Length: 579
Image (cartoon, rainbow, N blue to C red; front, side, top):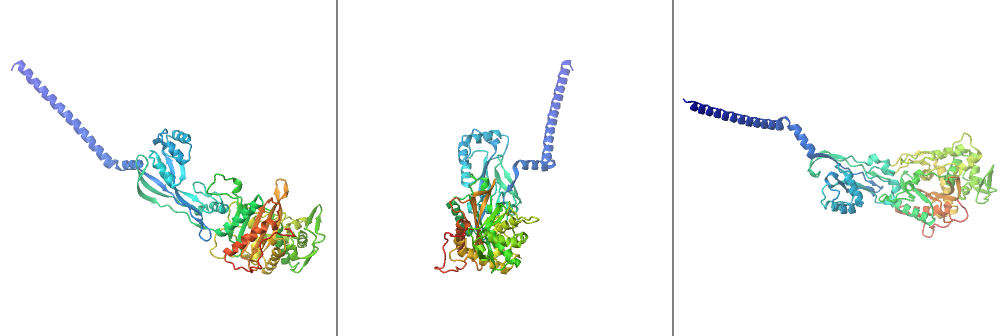
């Protein structure tokens, strides 16, 4: 073979070898890629399947809370006083929204927001995925916002607290904050009871955060428990109406009215002036939030005279037929002088109460001693918590000096040098009304009659009721006569205390009483602060409120009228004696 032939044969062999090598290389690479892909498939579907599935779920499955509505607060007849209604909250994902979006102008208008402020917030929090735009809106407004179809604007359901009786029950029921946590009143005192327990669920969302499907219920929402108050909304309305009217008519600083069930200690009505509307807190001021019937203290004045008289009768040193010489109409204790409206001379114990004689009751106190009077005050619940469980309750002051000075005994007997709240005063009169039994007070409806404690004899309480009847029929409380029902009670007029002590021209007008007097059903205390109309005595300002409220209340409670049409006395102006 020639050299040329040998060269061609070698070239062919080299070409064939190179072709085989290339083929093998390509085949090897191909097989390697196929193997790698096969391994990756095995890795994804077998080895890392659980991990990857969880990662996918993290990006598409979320756990969301399920809001639970707060328990309903009702009056004793089931009338709603506080309810939670479903509303919508508008929120946004700033990372999905163009802050220059033109439609945000309409969003701001519907939500009541400043447009510039809204756009500024979206720019400021552009790295976040959640901000509130407006919470707890009416569903119709939320629907209009969502109908614009702006990417990144969403809604969720929440609950909003609503108070059907508004300012009429505001001081008792209180209110919640935007997260439905109690802030005042019953809402605060029973917050844990009323609060629901939120639930949780797994949901499937798209890449814009919108819920596509509910997947699994983790824990169902547990609604709050309902609460039935002792308040009778009918009586609450009429008490509020009359108190508001008298405060307005006398240009008074404020007022308080408390009504108790004599036989159970339940609070049937509790109102104050001024008040506030818990549904609209735009004009809310701190001084209007106080439930003054429980939180504000005052000297009860002459309304304590019947209690001091009860201590006298209980002691055995005095009888209902005893008399007291009140001449010359005043008593001096050093530089301090106690005076009556005029010199009554020798009068009966009944007249001491009916004419509201400071001299007469102070002489009785001197005979008894301060400890005897104070002991009965304490047994009736003065100077100690009522146990009603209302936030901010003021206990009051009941003095207990190691040695009583004569002037201290005297002033204690007619309600000075001590302090009570309106509820404590009503509790004391409840004991006088029901035959001497002190029941625990309650703002919750009693399912059965509570167990009371006897703190005064039935005979003494009966005698005191006879004296209280005389106050209304012939004494300082003539304007407290509630129409077709008999009544008994006591007037009180005390100086208000200011920054520099007693204010000479500012008074609190008080009336505490019960009806019907022979078999009392209700006790009511009325107190009006600083009336400015010229009238300021308890018999002039507070007694007529008592008359109107008690007359209407007894009719609403179906208490049979005692007096005939010709015998019924309309509330009239007091004359002669002052209380």
